[in-house]
Image 1 (cartoon, one colour):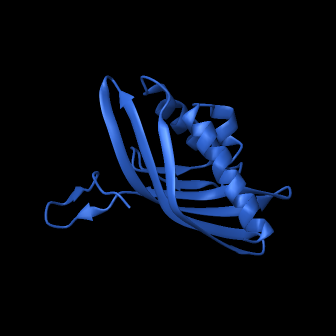
Image 2 (cartoon, rainbow, N blue to C red):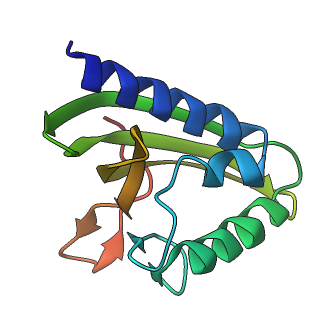
Length: 143
């Protein structure tokens, strides 16, 4: 593993720990600041432009939980070139919202850019597979 890959792996670990503890400031430190940030998520409104907009999304997301959520990653692959990189993999999300249990795996592609010498997430794309016969998202998928 290269030094850049190790730094991105450390960033992903920081993200995971911040997400599981619902630490808004800590998780936002993993993202590239500014209006250029773009995310596609599984929650409405599904597309988020700008760091401030995504921060507000995370705040709403964290407030939904009855207790701290569980996040788990699998099959992460990191590719780097210069000051840009991307990773692919799967992320499990398990939590309770309004007394209802949620437990699903998502597919995730992240793009990274160096910011003041450190890697930050510049683009985040989270999705679930679609069953083309039912036209519904597949939420019981497991990698």
